[in-house]
Amino acid sequence: MLLTHIKRYVEAFVDLIYPRSCPGCNNSMLRQEKVLCITCQLDLPIYPFFHSQNNEVQSVFAGRLPLETANCLLYFTKNGIAQGLLHALKYQDREDIGMYLGELLGAELLRSGYRADVLLPVPLHPDKQKARGYNQCHSIALGVQRALGGGMIAYDAIERTTANRSQTKLSRIKRWDNVSGIFRLVNAEALANKRVLILDDTLTTGATLESCGITALEAGNVRLSIATLAYAK
Image (cartoon, rainbow, N blue to C red; front, side):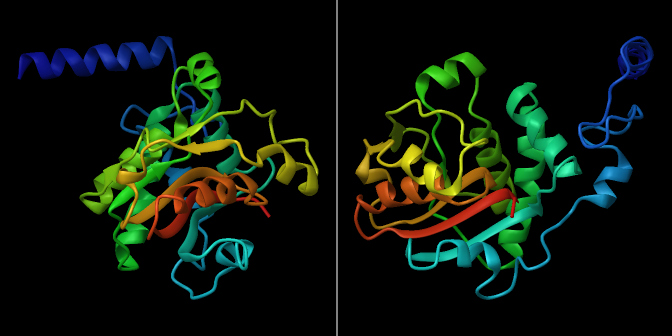
């Protein structure tokens, strides 16, 4: 009991000296608020068509990939909550955000009746992962796995062979050229004859996800789905 009280006093002191800001709105957070402030939790731009057949996320891949399902958790808008969260996840070492949002994503997948044999985080090139220190998609996969209560995470089934430049400022056509053939299947056994869910942080044109999906299908008899934290129209 004494140690618990001491821990609380220490945490309160640290929050006083080094106040934490919410990655969604940049406002100061209360001690009991962990990943997001209560306001941002309530204002998350949840994607409203998650449980709809042939939703707009799935239509992005129509005629391009044979998918069982395709979905996202949030709408991404410039300067919105989702942008703040994903920026902190990718560039500020906030893997707790990936876990938190991954659990929310997994909960929606569970509600829809979806179960995965394998969770496949989109790989980073080894040089980029070394520089960043982590792959943000791994934390997403851990959160989804926790919510689903299972699903093997295939960290090394596919590798990224090309350190392609950022997609952010490229046109749609140039994004396709930028990701063509950038993945290689290295462990077909991990994916073959399984229901595989590819996980990424953001969907824009779908070019990277399509390239990863095409590579995953090379394993043979793969039932493929895609889920992302956010969808940027």
